[in-house]
Length: 547
Image (cartoon, rainbow, N blue to C red; front, side, top):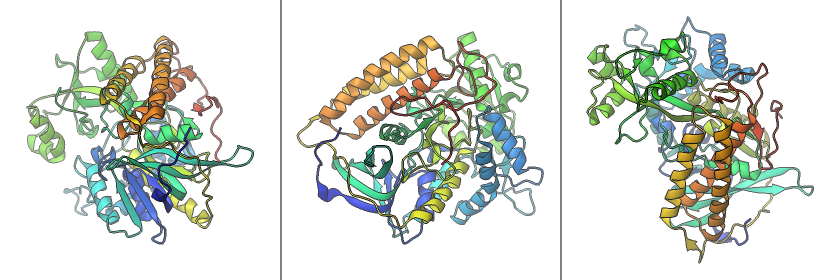
């Protein structure tokens, strides 16, 4: 694909190259040995990303009435038969240590003021048997990000590259073309629009999810699936991308862009209502508003379609005003900006894409099927979430697998890396893509995915979506080859690959399970299997075998 290198002198070398600066990437950078040179790539500012906007918290077994086994049972139940129980158990066992590590990094979690020992306050969310959510008011992600970034800026061995976008991975192949090895990545500097070669002994993808592929999402603009798309093009196995989680409750307001109403609001007594004031969740699950997210999102979608509604209501106004303001200061102030006083009024909400449960397939050490390439956080598929992520397990997963990468790298840190790599096409003297064309394609793809590959799916819609996406892909690849590479064009290219992967994965699953509901296959099969695909469109129906 690539022909002419921009400038060889732009090449940089690191022991570890981390692509992504959320909880996964930042925690990894902080814990790597200080004698290793680390490059940390962020395509915007360091804080921007899904971690920063995570309101709820981190699940951890801290209560005397709780247990590791119960956390495992709840996670597996929410995951609808596709969780890897050994992974779930290992993560749950480490939850307390992870909270302690974050506290040591300066993260100030909310304390339980009624507890004489001043232990951390625990709240409850959907799918959890007990209150086990550690939080920092209702802006946990923001507090974690700011604490980690403050530490990172003091680390001399970490070189930060903000406003840099990964274009593609650099892959070496051995003589028989079977074993692939990642030795770096092509990185676009958005400040001067030049492409640089960043080589490394180890490359870690921590780019987050792919939820911007849908028209409505709770995620920031950075969630365009860059890492998953790059890994797919490089030859990584991609697993279970049909399982895109729709958060049941995003604020419905024409001026409110992607604002999530945390599940913890329901955990504290919030009720879901129709506009006429009637509750409805009891019709769908005995757990009511605290059923797993896939059930709640489908229930809201069903009620909206049945009655032709634009939204449903989430009401916590029956609680004391002082409690609401103290427990949910961020949500209270944000809603107030739109003239919604949640101490007196119900909040209009709709489902929106929130989390990518599938991703780059990894083993317990976060290794992909390409040598020296790791994936962590939402970009990865570890088996923790199965067919539906249980609330507040995601930040836990980020920290857990960052530790696993460190352990694995330590065993192989003295290895050498060859310099051979394909050359990237020169950006010089190429035509700049018209912004209007990129914006139009971006909107069409996201609208198509929302209408054809949404909460409830059908074979007919999926097949039609696939044919349209393949046309988009051909046009976008031609534009990528012939026009000057820009950040917007990179994201558009990644977005169309993500759409193709989701659709292909959804077509392969001949059942309804967890977050994937197909009206043509409404039953759940007795045997749960992962959907794993790669760039050659090889479908691997059996369970992924760990290396």
